[in-house]
Length: 87
Image (cartoon, rainbow, N blue to C red; front, side):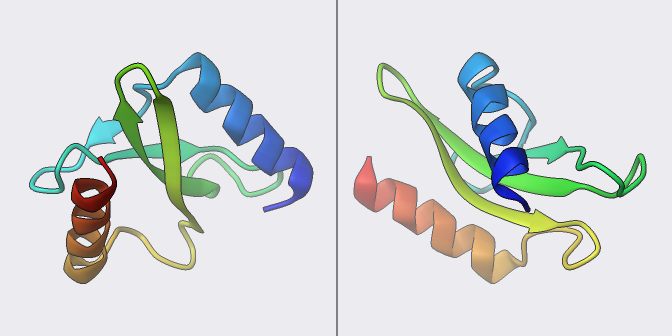
């Protein structure tokens, strides 16, 4: 992800903190699909986020769909533990 793309993702989530779908069993984590230039309709990135009322949205992980299609169960558990610890 380029710096320009990263900046666009941050701006997108600032305007749309509840973007994406809630990941079942992952403590409120959300997964959003973000298009990236030149990667086609289904290319692009997946961004895992967590919304904290009165604090905003935290972008916890981003990955290209061609690298990984979904979080592994271990990744989902680790991120859920992280948000339990932090919030």
